[in-house]
Each structure stands twice: as C-alpha cells, then as structure tokens.
Length: 147
View 1 (cartoon, helix red, strand yellow):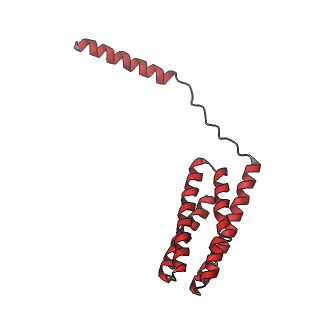
View 2: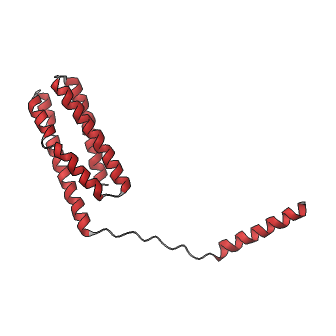
View 3: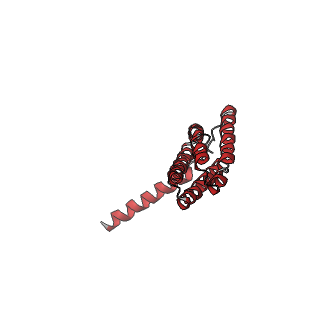
C-alpha cells in the first residue's frame, strides 16, 4: 500500500512538471479602446459637474447670512440639475466607477436634503454640519472624476 502511494505521487509530480514545462507564453491582455466621441462626452459632463461646484461654493455665504430663501433656491434650482448630470455621467463610466459615483452622489443629495430641512427650521448648526458633509461628498466626486 505504501509503495502504491509513492508511485502515484511520483507520477502526479511528473505530470505537473510536464504541464508547467510545456505550457506556452501567456498572451498579453488587450485593453479595449475607448471611443473618442465617448471621451468627449465624458469630458463635457465633467466640465458641467465642475461648473456646479462653483455654484455649490455660493452656499457658505448664503448660510452665513441666514438667507434661507436663496439657499433653498440654489439647492432646488441649479444644484437640482447636478443629480441628472451625474447620472448621465455614470452611464458613460466603467461599472466600478459608475457605482462609486452613484454612491457619492446619493450621499451628497442626502446631505443637501438635510441642509434644506435644517434651513427651514433655522437650525444654523445643523445647516453647517450638513453643508460640511455635502462638501466632502462633492470633493470626493471631483477626485473620482479626475482619477
């Protein structure tokens, strides 16, 4: 019985050595080419998101003045279009990037809703807290888009 196991292990070792030794070179992976029109469209959406950041940066002054009417108008007006632009952009990206972009976008808009609700109750501390988290999410979106 012991002799039989030794013979089987030697045969298996020889087969493994032959398989490894006789294998050919591993073919290199071919990266898919990206359509130039698609790259142009992605860049167009990225430019729009960057423009939304300029509008987003108007919020601190409105919050400091406790100008809740204009804060509400900015959130529901120009920044409301940000969600649609980010969703269009996510459709153009690779699945992992698209999922990450959607998650960051979802978090950004949750914070904007919290900011809007806190503004309606004139809760300055909650507004500032929600704005800080929203800014972090927006910054992460921009980092993702430029990576």
